[in-house]
Length: 154
Image (tube, rainbow, N blue to C red):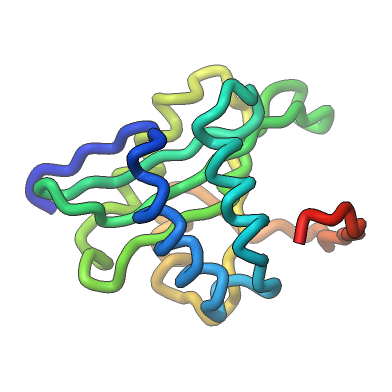
């Protein structure tokens, strides 16, 4: 990592981000493959005025190295803002260069009001989990239960 910049996504980033999202959502890193329409909705939400989702691009020496999306909610358990790192994708040729660590540190400065940060990782993704643990993340003992509703978003 020579000259890393982390910046908000903008409309000009759309094709590059969607390509990375497609790779991410077609990989074993996620349990559910999202449709192109959902990915486009996600990108548009990141660059809109929606206050609950922010998108970031990691650029290393002028080359797009990856992207991240963070959503915000209130955690009653901890009494404040929780930042959920929804997506974190780093292109293979940029991995193990400290970009993930830089992003995690950046997010803590970006959201100084946050009392909790959350993310998900597949157990097989040992490299990512090791990075997260170095930054103070721990495996939660809660079972995450979800219910998906078909809202024609697919």
